[in-house]
Length: 205
Image 1 (spheres, one colour):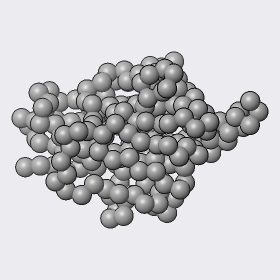
Image 2 (cartoon, one colour; image 1 turned 45 degrees about the horizontal axis):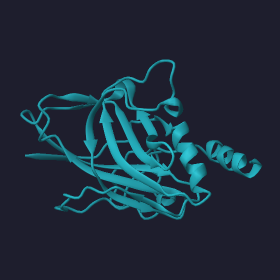
Image 3 (cartoon, rainbow, N blue to C red; image 1 turned 180 degrees about the vertical axis):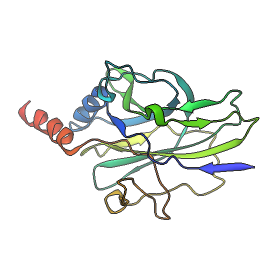
Image 4 (tube, rainbow, N blue to C red; image 1 turned 135 degrees about the vertical axis):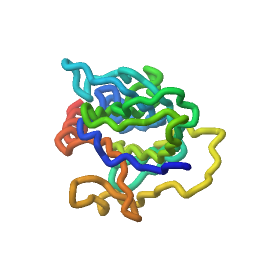
């Protein structure tokens, strides 16, 4: 029996990485932002690090192929994927959520990173319970207009993907983003001061 779930926004400690901010700056000059994959991990973020300074997932457990990439008018992109644990021989705590992108100069980079720490969700092995997840990562892309993704070539839609047409109108009372039918989604974003800082640096360059 499939247990179709949606992560409830437990990745409060998350942000665009410094590498991601650099790519956003390049996008302001016309470079493309191409998201490559979503990664789930079970590692704890090192004490000396912050999401902004992370360059890779600590302990990757699952690569989630991308099945959706939508750009809205608020400077955000919704990058989504579908995954199930049918190939998981062992259970793990879903503690890390990462979004990777292709940098034209550096290759694949960690664009955004979130870590749920002690509130990680347990993902059982397939032999215990079958779990299927729709994962939406909502992330800032600024004024970039050329935003795309490397999509899963084998993806075959069996149920509707969650679509979020206007993120700004969907903030729930608890501060989490909800979809059109009330589904909770995972959010990775930037604060307004972080966004302003990037644009100020570009204007002063």
